Length: 312
Image 1 (cartoon, rainbow, N blue to C red):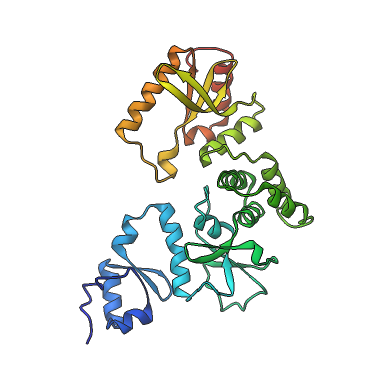
Image 2 (image 1 turned 45 degrees about the vertical axis):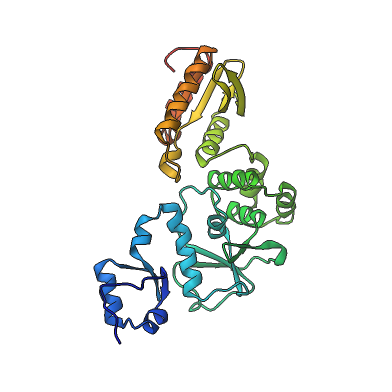
């Protein structure tokens, strides 16, 4: 008996076409659910409950597309390919910046053109089971292999973000260095080696990584990262600090690119902390995403502050 096209099954969120057909939803019912906005087509032959898709943040949606690909292609733990590059990075929940939602897979041998969809890019650089792990029930490259693959595909700043976060999550720098040493002549190896050389596990967001990279590129005196200081309000940690000048730089862009949202209590504690540290002689510069792309203004503002000029 055909199902009412206005309602979806009470359970489940992700379905292949044949699953909906087995539940009694004919082609017209599926089309009606799509037209009404109750169902979202994730890719050919794979659908998601629209209310779930609407509620998801951009980061979660990016991962959802990978799970939809796995569901739509009947991928299992013994599948012939593994998720790699930025798709593996998303499964590992690595920070990414300005990256598209193309699905990246790694497999032995190049497939026929019909095997993968237009939104899928297949890679064939050799890999072994030591390069594979399970993430969220899917086969994906390890943190180390993921960082290496991303760094050899992306530009330097994007690569540094991935390497920083991989190191923070526990990636083995020795394993990554061995990978870099074995890849002479490969496209992107210089970018990977540069990102590995400058990677820092203390960076806590993509914005902090880009801030550090900009300070270095502008040849400004380097700060210390994640510096602990004391005040009457207790112990505090600063994103960047120049101790001699008692200057702190804080990156405030988390709310725009990540799922984090500051609560009123968090904002109150932040203001309380800054007031207490100001009493100890510290000065603050706050940086947002837009500031990272106004390099001349950023440089002048920071140099003035380092020189001790007020109003920087």
